[in-house]
Amino acid sequence: MKPGFWKRRGVLTAASVALAMAVLPMGQAAQAQTPPGVLIVGQIAEPKALDPAAVTAVNDFRILVNLYEGLVRYEPGTLEVAPALATGWEISEDGTEYTFTLREGVMFHDGTPFNAEAVKFNFDRMLDESHPFHDTGPFPLAFFFSAVEATEVVDDLTVKFTLNAPYAPFLSNLAYPTGLMVSPAAVEANGADFGRNPVGTGPFKFAEWRSNEAVVIERNPEYWGDPAGTEAVVFRPITDANTRVAEMLAGGIDMMVEVPPTALSQFQGDDFRVVEQAGPHVWFLILNAKEGPTADKRVRQALNYAINKEAIVNDVLEGTAEVAAGPTPPAFAWAYNADLDPYPYDPEKARALLAEAGAEGAELTFYVTEGGSGMLDPIAMGTAIQADLAAVGLDVKIETYEWNTFLGEVNPGLEGKADMAEMAWMTNDPDTLPYLALRTDAWPDKGGFNSGYYSNPEVDELLEAARTETDQAERARLYKEMQAIVQEDAPWVFVANWKQNAVTSDRVEDFSLEPSFLLQLESVTKN
Image (tube, rainbow, N blue to C red; front, side, top):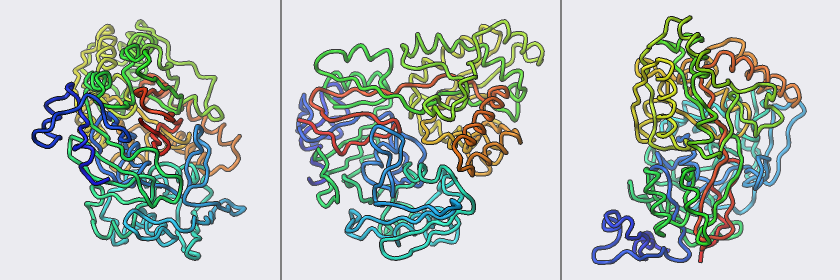
């Protein structure tokens, strides 16, 4: 299929005539039905880039996992690690050496071979500041592989990682999109523009990216595994949730993820299929622990008491989530502290804490996004939170941003800008979220995502110990202790753990959601 095929076939419907006129060739009318064999996916935002090492949003990852592959992947329907570009691996007794046997005969989309040299290139590019293509970053999730001391080519199909200490999440992190393998030749050819010219080994290959209109990927005819079930996939950024719903109802898109809970009832007929899947998700408010009213723990606790999270879950999210008790999602059953109860809704307790802290009537700036990866119904939730905080005497000013702009404001830190911000994480290991967003060494100026500048040395020690502990029972104990301390310190308002959802048309078959929140589309078919 040549680039532009999806436009010539007429993807869009009368529900988006203005966009259709911009996308379709002049004089061609938009059809009422999307073409067979081409899957049209409504996304919540334009991707930031298509370089797996350079992005952090699940919105982007959902495209990337169809273009690229890693050494390992998640076993379908689970978060267990299974072979992918590696057919097997051995771990040394001390847990510091991982040796992978690579799959033979795999080619990147540009015709260059996937081999041990390619693996070394990928990790050196991220981790070695002297690497000639390190400047194609930044690499915000290189944290995942900070334990890697060396990547060694043993032979063409064997690669060895030497770690500076045992690192329990290593295999799980390799399965995460940050571990997807890119073509060294394509990076060398495109440099910092590689994110607009992606080349992987996956079941689909890149066709084109029309800014603010669509990213198009097409079936890879040279794929080493089973061929993709569709000829192409078109990812359309439709930032407004109501517009995505209207497009889905009108037939302009075949699939949408993160359906607003209030819209789910519109897709109950025979023409649609609603898919749900629990996963490790937590929706929270980052609180500025460095300056302003929320630098006081009593104020942070007051916010947790003041917000009626049960009402948000039941009335805004229509029962599609559960109230969160802390920073670790209950989907990680082995590491989850089930002894912790969520902060109860207690406005009187909130008022008392605010009075004790001298923060009665405080003014707070609240960053809210229009929509984003796992952000549920962010404007409605933000408005409900604003009302609850007003009820205990706080003056909350909401500032609303498009998703990528929002990330650009929040990720560098809230200092000097805001007191709190919405955030959601879908994670792959109990280590990931707290290590990247709650440690002192994860403050934004140190390269992490601790945008509220929370710091507790005891939490730091527990997290460092847990990631090097190879006994799972002891790891669990450390994580549970961390959760209890973090809940008490309240660096976040712990809002909800969400059950992800998607809706497809009745023309789409063999689609399922993954606990990883990634969008694996290679097996999907469409008539």
